[in-house]
Length: 128
Image (tube, rainbow, N blue to C red; front, top):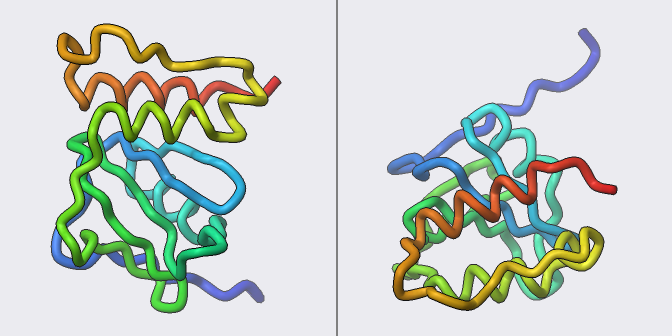
C-alpha cells in the first residue's frame, strides 16, 4: 500500500457517543471511534481556532489537535448548555441547507443528551 496510515489517538478518556464534530465548514456526527477518527482527520479547524472541537453527548467539549492526530478533553472545563448546542446547530450550514431548525421550546423538560442525540440523527441524514 502506498498510502500513509494515520494513527488517530484518544488522550486521557474517550468521549461519550454520539458526538458532534465542529469543523470550519459544517457540523457532522459520529457514533463510534472509527467514524470519529475519520471525520476529525478530514475536518478543518475554524478560522479562529487551531483545533477541531467535538461535543460529546454529556455536553463536554473535546479538542482534536490535527498536528498530533490526538483527541483530548478540552483543557479548560467547558460544558455546553442546551441553548448553546441548539444555537450552534440552528446557525450551521447544515441546518440552512436542510431548512431545519431545532425548536427552542420546552428546554427545561428535555435532557441535553436527548438534544445532542436528536441533532446527531439530523446530521447523519443525507444532504438533499
